[in-house]
Amino acid sequence: MKSTAVNDTISRIVPSLRESAGITLNRGDVRYVVTEYGIAYLHGKNVRERAMSLISIAHPKFRPWLIEEAKKRGIIYRDQAFIPGKRGEYPENLETHRTTKTGLHLFLRPVKISDEPLLKDFFYSLSDRSLNRRFLSIRKDMPHERLQDFVIIDYSHEVVILGVIGSAENELIVGVGQYGIDEKSHTAEVAFAVRDDHQNRGIGQEMLSYLTYLAKKEGLLGFTAEVMIDNKPMLHVFEKGGFDIKKKNDAGVYDLKMAFRG
Ligand SMILES: CC(C)(COP(=O)(O)OP(=O)(O)OC[C@H]1O[C@@H](n2cnc3c(N)ncnc32)[C@H](O)[C@@H]1OP(=O)(O)O)[C@@H](O)C(=O)NCCC(=O)NCCS
Image (cartoon, rainbow, N blue to C red; front, top):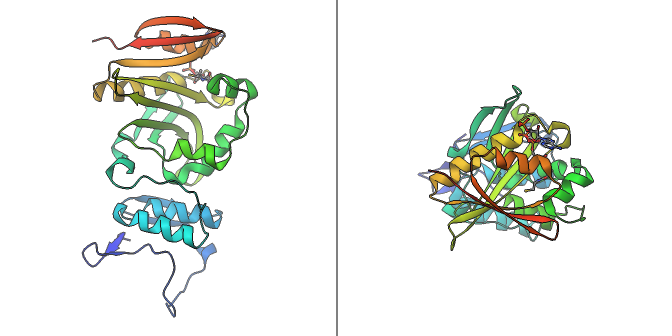
């Protein structure tokens, strides 16, 4: 269906149905809802997840209203963050497909506001060592407040790209690559995590190469990163990235400055 009606003045995705609206389907019957903004796969999801999926395919101008209405009704988290307008819009043009050096087909796509449950599964799948290397901390829990930082993205300042495998209704996040721009230095701090059971299959390398392409296109001059000095796989992937690298050891963690060439 089209997300709007009457010359874009009415949203077809609404917080609740009109009294006496004729309804011929129940919630369990609906699997997909498709609009010009994407596909919401609803099967097996709880009410909050359904609401976030539907809001993510509503017309952008109605999304802030839908978020507010859903909050009022207690359907979604009351502190659900949201970035209205162009800055927070899903940049579909950044979706791309890659095949890694081991022949794994990877769908690389920006994170969506409806990805919180998938990301939660991803982070809880990581081993203590991977979590520790990614966050340089021993904290293991991933509550809603912390997950929001990964899904509510102002794309004018940061990019979060997911490496996904599986069909649209059964997506599995196998990697997360992200950068946040430092306006002053025209560089971006980059970080990665790949599911333990999918490491060493070229996912990290593909994600770095894609983020490098995007960052260069943005006119950035290089990446920075903090990497534990014993994190050989990450250091190796960065070294293969073709940057001019400067390393500073600060209490067991390398501060890396990686300038783009050419
Ligand atoms: C670092 C990380 C993102 C790399 O992702 P990945 O998908 O496994 O990376 P790739 O498969 O593309 O490449 C891994 C490379 O490291 C190499 N490698 C693996 N273990 C190594 C080791 N102990 N010493 C040296 N190199 C090693 C692999 O051989 C491979 O290099 P190659 O392509 O030249 O053979 C992943 O290991 C991870 O998520 N680690 C935990 C989180 C983390 O450390 N994040 C970094 C914080 S910035």
